[in-house]
Image (cartoon, rainbow, N blue to C red):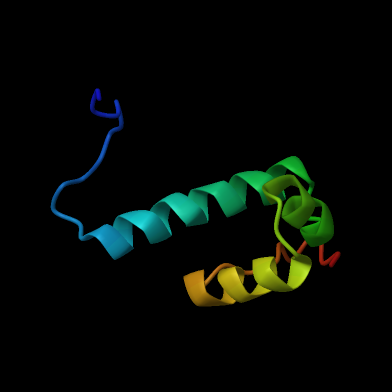
Length: 69
């Protein structure tokens, strides 16, 4: 099995790397959905409540200029 070709900071622990990856996925989904959390959740294959919980845990906030849920 080949190693994944990823730019990883090996000084970070596993949980931090997973959180950073998850944060990037959520931010990209929110951007692609113009801040609509329900659409972002659907594109990620998770429930809106799960997205909200993950955003809270990761310290992500809803865009102020687009407060749509």
